[in-house]
Image (cartoon, rainbow, N blue to C red):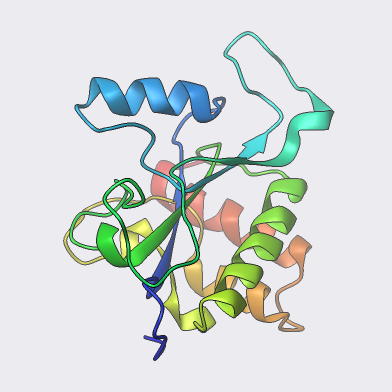
Length: 178
């Protein structure tokens, strides 16, 4: 973990496990689970905000704010997310809308957003984790091979956007089959 004096020590990447959705939809779903509201701090859209929309290009890669997050060093109760049990009080949750496929715009936006958050909170890419990497959960979320994603964040030559997309396909086929 980074040695940041900030409240944020980790960033967790999630997927919605749905082919569509937006912050309003997730807020409703999370409230039905008994949470205070949307559990993520940021949602990155895939161009399908609603079930009956095939694709709206202008929404692909758009960031929607979820839980508020200010710049002081203390997580206030309204800022604490609901996205990784046992880590909510020290982490930011970023959710990509999708399950087995993510658009290029989503992945590029995630790279930009997370790179900015890492720099802002004095973290390193090792502090960026997939939900499945938290030991107390038996999940596949975000359905992205996180070593590849961290290489993509670092700008490693062997992990371009195209290579990341190939790694995601291989990863999700290993989970769900072809």
